[in-house]
Image (cartoon, rainbow, N blue to C red; front, side, top):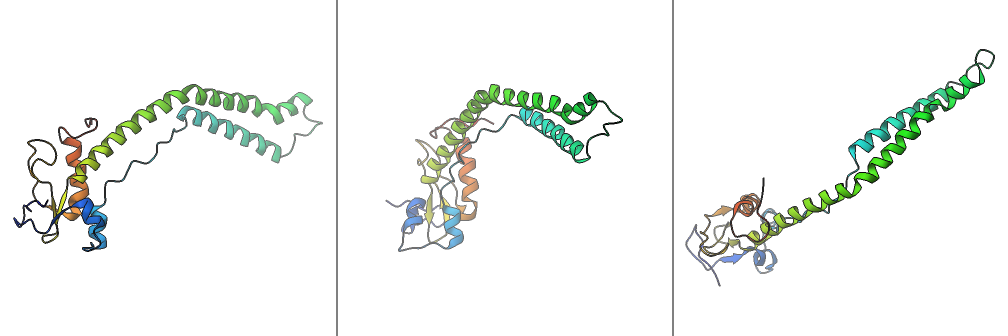
Length: 192
């Protein structure tokens, strides 16, 4: 089945974009091929570290570095200081660094489940948006004669209008914009 190109009003050189990408008899140029590729799938989500925990770890690290610098400068003169002062000079920063690091760990563990759930929800929305874009991309046709893309009438749902001719280079942006606003396209509604 061929559909009529909105630019040249012919149907003998029109083909669905997924077919055009795999058609060895009519190879596409590298630039056209790149522009006609399907929308990329979203990257796998990663649960980020807690920002509060990162600040606590950083402060603990700075205090630990201060301890190392103190030790690098040498111990205070035993004749001028007491044993308690020398012990505080060497181990004093640990009294602050260890609780800060433990507090960072506690915050990290306490908020991990909430951060993981937020990432999961975000990934579901991103995957649904990608599904909508892929669905729109599958409805796009290419006219090999005019080198333009278009969506035939009714391809995006009953009563959907045909698209105008779209330059191949503009297709990725057009697919994204159409999928994000088209009613009736499978997936979640795009909320911005």
